Image (tube, rainbow over the protein chains, first blue to last red):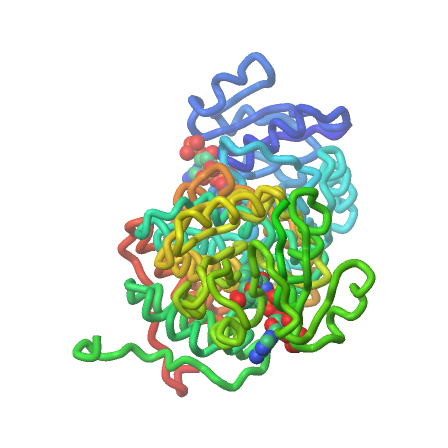
Length: 266
Length: 266
Ligand SMILES: NC(=O)c1ccc[n+]([C@@H]2O[C@H](COP(=O)([O-])OP(=O)(O)OC[C@H]3O[C@@H](n4cnc5c(N)ncnc54)[C@H](OP(=O)(O)O)[C@@H]3O)[C@@H](O)[C@H]2O)c1
Ligand SMILES: NC(=O)c1ccc[n+]([C@@H]2O[C@H](COP(=O)([O-])OP(=O)(O)OC[C@H]3O[C@@H](n4cnc5c(N)ncnc54)[C@H](OP(=O)(O)O)[C@@H]3O)[C@@H](O)[C@H]2O)c1
């Protein structure tokens, strides 16, 4: 049985709390948060605290607080030579105070508080300063059904960057499509199956192989028609830049001129 | 029983052939393609032809050929006053020769030849010149289990544009993430669950509500770190433009300067 103390009560900490609670091989010894209100309702299930001096001994301390707060919180911990990890994709292992043995337990998934998370679909990127601590991270990842991947700091930061492309930027593509179709009273429902299919396709095919559409086909007539249809200047820029990017990937010579037209041309 | 003649043997026509063949309420009377080779192997299952003069009478002719070839092929049809439709998202109904009654049967999904298609997840956008023909399109859509949506030409063209954002541009985001992670020997597998989760999330939540990440949080430290990590200039431009777009959507004032650094700064 591995004893865990959770620090933080945001999206990640709350989902980890639920997942660890459901596991037989992990015991949540304490749950700390700066503001007590966020964890108060769990008083009967575990020991909840808002005072760092009350922290007990545990096999691992998981610091799941905002990126900017990680370094400082690790300094405030009133002990040393124990095992502490953060859960961030972008913060360095070395941002944790070196009085403790440091590690990272980064779940590569997008968490929001209401949406349920099935940890068996969450890859966890693990990293430790001290090799002998690696097994602890593997065990708690397995305890919640997650696959784990040993990753260097540099790789983790690159993964975090990649995640911005496949998650935040992709979601913004959905948002733009939503705006464009809303403006013509089109039900966004119609686009949802295509959104799913696009994500499904790259589960067993490379994005390179999966590409289709007017940019890849270099269908100039459609490309021009689309640009004319787009009213928002920023959406036009995105259309041009993404078309150019697709054509570069697929070795097509034709490229939109990315420069803005000047105003009297509009 | 509705009799259908298919023209074309590409991605869309092939999938429609399979779906109609499996249905009890549609009969494929003939299958035409310019090059016989593509349909030769179906000789025993249906009447395959490569000569337009052999076309028989049918309730509906579905022209599923390349966008650029639709207008011309519709002119070459050796009959009039029958019901012809194309399957394109971007071609106007009026590009079909007006000697026949015209319509559109646009399946909003991304087809590739090898990937199987479940038509129950394919919304079909339908449009007819003659109102009385609408029922035929509804019936054949229902015959293959598809939902149908009556859509105007303008709406269809806007949908096609929106589809480019949620499909082609999103897929290019996956591709860029693939390139970025490959360069650091990171297994692309790690990103696949996040790709799925991002698409799943907007099935019951608006893309606006689903957004997270450094741009939305205006986490300047991470934004700067990411820009430094990106080596490719075009990927940098995409990072900046998408960050700006997210921040505009969410009413955040801070914006990256989208201009290129000049060369001696690099
Ligand atoms: N959300 C995701 O999708 C995701 C995915 C993978 C990794 N991560 C990483 O997981 C960590 C937590 O993210 P999250 O999304 O769970 O954050 P969150 O929902 O915004 O919650 C932030 C937590 O940090 C605490 N906190 C903030 N500033 C603090 C400070 N100065 N001192 C002490 N505690 C402070 C907050 O306490 P209060 O309740 O008192 O405000 C809250 O419990 C971050 O490192 C993040 O990069 C997030
Ligand atoms: N693919 C998709 O994801 C998708 C989705 C929705 C709608 N659509 C629309 O469906 C239609 C067909 O697309 P597709 O992807 O199936 O195309 P495709 O796989 O590229 O197949 C093109 C077909 O058009 C024929 N063709 C090309 N030029 C011709 C010409 N000049 N005269 C006669 N036939 C010609 C080809 O015949 P040969 O075999 O002789 O070359 C082939 O059968 C297009 O309007 C497209 O916009 C496509």
